[in-house]
Length: 262
Image (tube, rainbow, N blue to C red; front, side, top):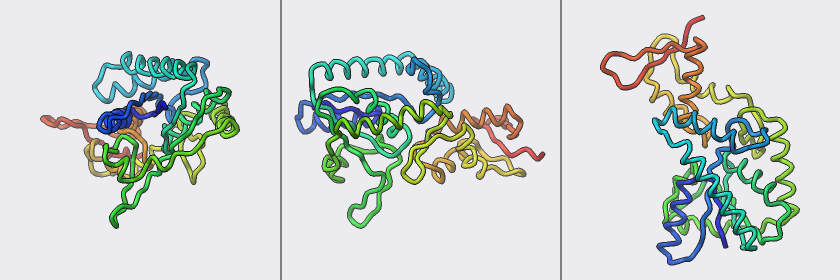
């Protein structure tokens, strides 16, 4: 059995879980970030490079090539285990990156003869009278896998099911609107400014607000699965379009923004 995940943090957690329990299991990670950006080009991986550059710009990193190579390595490992006829298990959620990754992978694997299953992890759990909400699989720790009985969610993923999801992926690629989001259980495309409303609702036209505070509130109040670097990217765009006013007080490490009055 080989596990396939789309979140690199969760991949590390899963590997540590297997090591802790002395289970010999391979984990393949494909951090494609398919909920964002162009997906219509013939070379899908080249479009990921552009997105990774945006991500690194706002996270102060310079690891685009490293991240890209990890994707290439994951695909190489996937092709190898498919050729070896190993059983595959795909972990995913209803978050855009996971759902799009799952649809893409179903299309990629639709005609193979390997035994395939999936673990569709819910985003809300109840435990000891408490409700636990998950923003992404990377938030899970080793003990959560057993505490929330995640392996019990495993179901067979036959060829007909994979073909059905592959049609969804083809529709998304054909549409190629910049964002893919989950609305009422349906994965659909939205324009690039869809998440802007969650930013702007926390910006005042009269008082400057710390950018980090605005992003934190947007993440807390808005849809799950939107990375902070995407919100920072959109803030820079809105500043460039003069929809937001920006200033950075002397001695402050972060900038402040307010709405422009038109």
